[in-house]
Length: 442
Image 1 (cartoon, rainbow, N blue to C red):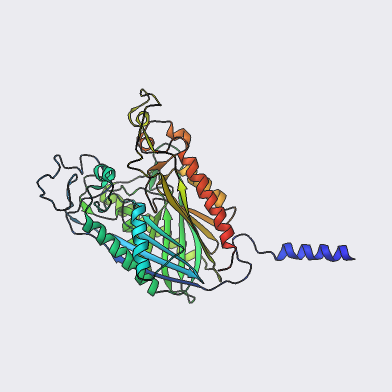
Image 2: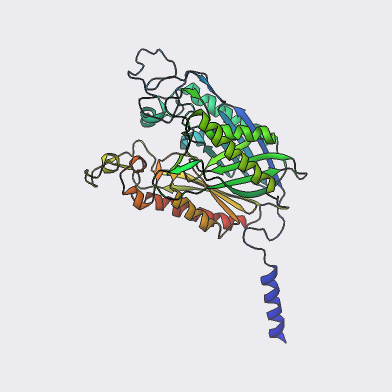
């Protein structure tokens, strides 16, 4: 008799155990607030991203003719605004700030400065994610690195950095003030025709959507994720622009009336299929249309938990492979240390909200590595997404086979043939930690 009772109890426990990704009992209610702000700097700031002659001055501005440009040509106008969009999520004592900004990248020091500014006004978060869209037509001049200044950003201009940081801090403050009870839903869509592979391998067509609404269904914010390079506009463009993802986000904001935060995916081997201003319109329309379709068909959860993990990752000593840059005729052992210009460690962040998980990468991860991380993440959560070019920039992270083939992306992969696998393994580790944290009560 006793054995029969124990069997019944065991069966009932298995049946009633909550599935992975769902809390065992209701936790604190979810709050959310969002805000978008125009952070376009004055015309004349150089555009960041391309280092070739199309953007570069033939002679550096030694005579100081351009107050904000030195290595690169100054911008000549604004096509569409450079935006910073903030989303604050809170459940009990757990608080997460997510900022999406139309920049080619963001350095770790910028994240630290933003965190300190917010602490000074009483805003503290378990995790801050600063996601750059990777537009190659956004402003330069915002980073202190002399290497990146010469290669792609132009020299450091304090007032440009202050303008951007001040705008992001204000977006965070206003999003925090706007917090209201919220529900979320997570959906997936696909867009295939607007990207192409740099290495001739299959790409990830997935669009991820985090739908944030009030209990009555009114929108609060949209966070969307898709892997595409912000290079639809070429190096001949000299107008400030958020490129294709900036155009798509503006279209989404017109449709929903709330901030639309774009986050890049595993973008290391992904290029846009179309180019120029016609390519911007066609690609942005396709992306916005699928995001809206996914938003409308995505149900919201009745209860949504929140968890975050922020970890430091140690990277191998960064070295430039001359073989990867110049060709197979160069010996593979011939490398140049670049630890003075690239980070030896960086921050990675994981956020779980509802049944979804999002993990950041401080650079450009190759598609096949990103898909492997997502597959492992979906063993732990109902949905999992890679958020590239976030919280720092350490170049490209490739699979060993692609690192061994000389190319532009292999040249910019600075942590050896195992660098990509190290990054993917650490992202998976963070997802596992996040699963454990999500199971704890706030």
